Image (cartoon, rainbow, N blue to C red; front, side, top):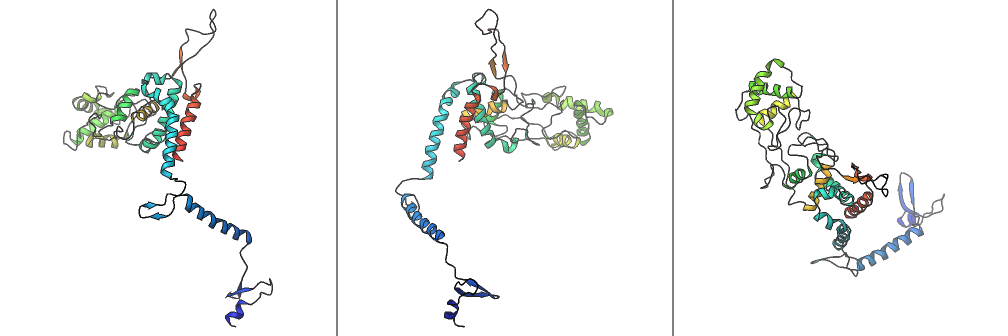
Length: 343
């Protein structure tokens, strides 16, 4: 059968002309494309030509055609960021001038700091400390009340700003000797002091050898960790008498710490984040659960006999941020701004 005869062949079942292609006895029918599909195809062609004209599209030696609208994604981002900055400026002007004490006692500024700090923490800190600040081996848990350098907002702010062993001129630095690696103590002495350190938190395995370990501890460790092993924030020395451990509290880990020492690094954020963001982070980290001293105070007003319905002796009470009147509106506004930036 010639090619011309195949092309004109009509399928007996459907009455449709075949294309002449056949596979294992199956013949391809020459059905035309649906009319609606053709119209959509033509409209897409027309739309694409219009798009080429009004939007940036064709590449050129100097970049690309600008388009009749002069639109660009960079310009759109710039405009959206300007809108976000305007929305934040309502609170930012007040936030910049306020002290930490004023921020903690102003419901709107506190909510603004918490919303901004939560976003900054997620983007910059969660990689090491976890999304909820619970930490990991070698990365402190920010939810407890155990702080190497202090847990007030000012202490946290300084740590975030300058870092720990970060290379900054104002860095926090603690240096624990490598008692084994530098041959300051023998292996037996390190084993003895390890057992004594475990006894400080009630985990000692060999009560008989505590005397030797105590002597070694007093001679080599007490100057930083204190006579009772309760630590010292002036040196960034951890409390050894509780059950909170940065690298682990089992015998092998403590032995390794004494033998080789530890020297974790936290970067300085001074050059990476602006001061307002660092202050927001300080407030947020402080409120994760382990912060010290400062609290959010809102006066609890209750009627008092003989007054105009206001108790002048009302005591401040602590309230979570989402329980503070007006705080939710501030958080929603900041979160909307953050969402617009991400989109």
